[in-house]
Image 1 (cartoon, rainbow, N blue to C red):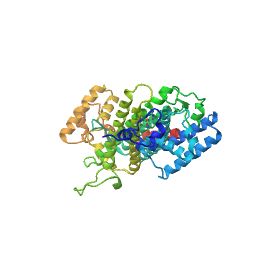
Image 2: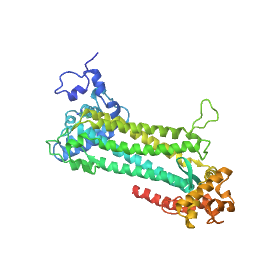
Image 3: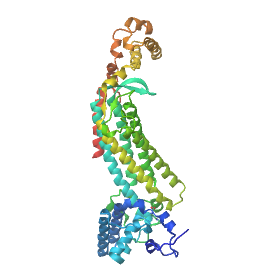
Image 4: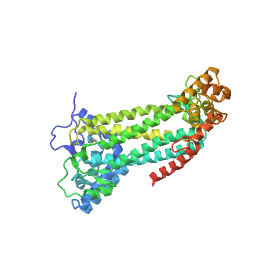
Amino acid sequence: MTHSSKGAGAKLLHGRILEDTDHFVEAFTASVSFDQRLYRHDIRGSIAHCRMLAHVGVLSAAEAEQIQDGLAQIEGEIDDGAFQWQTGLEDVHMNIEHRLIELIGETGKKLHTARSRNDQVATDLRLYLRDEIDALLALENALASALLDLAERYGEAVMPGYTHLQAAQPISFGHHLLAWFEMLLRDRDRLVDCRRRANQLPLGAAALAGTTFPIDRSFTARELGFEGVAANSLDAVSDRDFAIEFTAAAALTMMHLSRWCEELVLWTSQPFAFVSLPDRFCTGSSIMPQKKNPDVPELVRGKAGRVFGDLAALLTLMKGQPLAYNKDNQEDKEPLFDAVDTLRNCLTAMLGLLPHIEADTGAMARAARQGFATATDFADYLVRRGAPFRDAHEAVGKAVAYAVQQGIELDEIPLAQLKTLVGDRVEADVFDVLTVEGSLAARDHIGGAAPAATAQAIKAGRERIAAADS
Ligand code: ARG
């Protein structure tokens, strides 16, 4: 069943359309329920456009002032929750324009001169994303600092490093945290990069081909703080690659956060018991009284999937579109907003959680002493005494097999026994390299796990954060 509507939208868009819009179609094509989130940026863009029109003489100074006053009043109404959003007015742009005309009359109808909703929405979305990126960057820098603080606290806390999730070589917890720090810094730099490409002004492209009015796009760009003016009108109104690029960067960040969270979930489980999370970030079970579940990391891990989905949605949305603007693009907003919200929430969660995790350095050290984590150091020791690495590798392998059989650690094998296992090159000083502390301290080079190298990396890390802040 279909109905006709005499909605307010008809007043702004009638012209060629003689029939009133079908009720279902009106609701189906409307975006105001979600794009109203862009209202501040829409008003900002309109004010800049209006000032530009006055600057080039298309509007009089008095008209421009009237329009700007009206827009300021509307922003206040929306801020206060007093604004009446109407689905019949389709989207945020027409809701605001309609109200402007209601407030200031005929002059309000002049605002849309030399503009289309196509360049308007592309501008709004870029302004919106720019602000969100700035907020996300602040969160990421704070999180990066928190990681450095934690790495500093645990720079000498020995733990097993893993490959294949099998104990591999001793590292420090601080060194492990610095790996997270590096991931985060690349994530941050991707946002910085994406912001730069998004920061170009679409306004002036109008519907698709530009406008016949003597506009000054550089003026508008300056007003809005854009670094440049989109160089092709068709491209300016149609491509959403900036939104896709952001979402791709967000997806990578979520992938990283998900990996951290996976480790936190593992480390808080009883077989590891390496770290504990603050109670206020955990929940109990409705049936098992003893439970303290790491819900927050689990949820962050789970939310990564949403953002990957947002990215897939945006890529798919764009891939079949001929130039220039198509209504498909209205579907860009919800995935983008979802990616922004999810990333912001997850970064906020990590920022709340991370500084308060407590490491059980005793449990970590005990685990580091199990699993023959210094076997490589033993082989390196034999190499320093003239053995070719492959032979040393094989000899130490025999010693490990012996220790497994005896149920002891490498440094518990008596020297005489060691000599029969790996040959005469081994001397009493081997026990220095078989300790996890010795193993760790020896990896003292840029990027290595030694506490001295970690301290250097933390210092450099602080400078890298500060450099991005300035
Ligand atoms: N609500 C639309 C969107 O989100 C605004 C642009 C509409 N332009 C058009 N020619 N119908 O993309």
